[in-house]
Image (tube, rainbow, N blue to C red; front, side):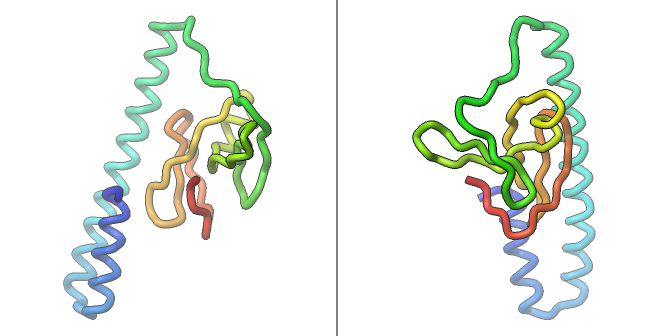
Length: 126
């Protein structure tokens, strides 16, 4: 269970309790968490760029299998029939690279490669 999932569980418990002060405090923490996640993502992108400069011979992974667009994102259907995703639309559409989106908060996903943020309601990673 990720930190975001644990946080969302605490928010659900707070809603059931109906404590307004607790709910306000949690919303402030959510804002801080979102800022930390955004800063973390910026640093990941910066590290990726520096790695590309230091090690230009390393190339990003090209997909082995079929890439399909479903439910607002790309999914990699591997040779064994397993569907993996969601994948970043920005990375696929610009460079034909597949990078799995990481769930950040509830319906929001972020690409660790390019920083694209997507809202995909009802989508569960696989």
